[in-house]
Image (cartoon, rainbow, N blue to C red; front, side, top):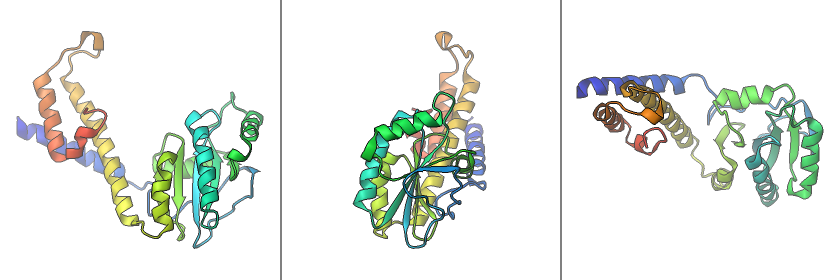
Amino acid sequence: MMGIMLSIVFSSVSFAQEATDSAILTIGDPAPPILVGEWFKGEPVSKFEKDHIYVLDFWAAWCKPCMQAMPDLSTLAKKYKNKITAIGINVMENKYFPKTRTVHIVDSMGRRINFSLAYDSADMMKKIWLDAAHEAAIPRTYVIDGNGKIAWIGHPKKLEENLIQIINNSWDLEVAREKRAYLARLVALDDSVREEVFRFFHSGNLSDFYGEPDSTLLHIDSAIHVYPDLKYTSQVT
């Protein structure tokens, strides 16, 4: 039985590996171009200049965490004024937040937003940056290093601790790339384990839940044996 379970787990690992090793945008890759429809605050940025660091913040006016993060990015832009350029890319807006309302919200924040902002009118930035990197949620921040490569991708609340290393040239691009790939495989494996565990459920109705707990635990234990960090993921815990 253990051999069968491990076989299933290794199949899951293989699937997760294929899912995350395909041609997706990731750390260490050359940054895609800046293809926006309209700049509506600050100076336009047409390309990434060599030996300069850029911070791209993807946001929407309806996204409360996005708006909460923007003053902090403004602070960082001022703090590292001569070393970084911050750019806010407005994405995923909808009929409830037309351009005029977005502009009004930005204007109401005044100097709390002191970096350039642009509209992703044709969804090109979403496509070549967010979708290409399998990033479905916002806010999402990218750091572009002085060589025009993506150095970091993550939530803006974790930006400064990583940005400092990139500015100080102590950032290991390859380690960051491997870490992101590992976490992506872990998430994919977490999802695949969830699908496998559902095979042991005899009812999809949580109010009438029963199944095969021994088989379920055996499968989870086998998966954790392959990927120990899996025990910290959402589906397993």
